[in-house]
Image (tube, rainbow, N blue to C red):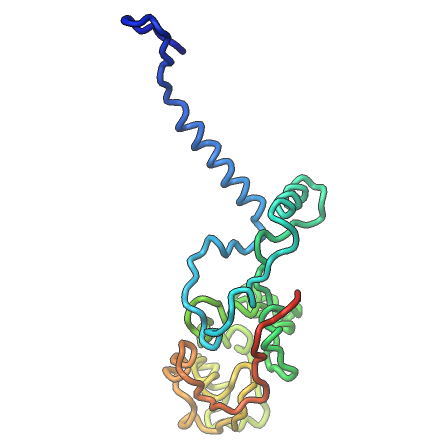
Length: 240
């Protein structure tokens, strides 16, 4: 829209206020589109990473965060085709999601008492809904500066009906469950069973709840230094 300048007779474009809302609309649509295209991914680049967890201080970023297959253009196109019904599945954007396989590359143990794959069994459906024990990062969420991020009393989700014949404890497991003393579980038991230790038969000599909490954060293990298996060290090469 134009108007005449009274002095010079030249046409002057009338200022419009439509530019800003139009620009904001396009920006909003772009962000929504990008979110939709990446909705099935772990958008780690939107996070503000915290301190590396205990034991991972010397790891390089790309040892856990590996590049996803294809270029960014190919990844966006693949997700667009998936949304349009031309592909059976979407794909990851930027970097691969850090999955169980990433952790198990260094931490896989043949005699793990609580291997993550076990929790995919039908009998653990309730546990999967409540605490998701089938994923490593449910207990060991990275960038928190801690060793374990799961609550101490989470044993109750699976063991609230536990019964042991010839119980060796001076206070039976059944009684502890009845009294809801779930903080005592890890006072005797190493969750993954990787520490070489002798189980106590008396509640008077188990590790305290505070010792376990300190261990979950960054204190040395109360279970001792002797282990059956040690984590693999060194840079990882190749894809999982």
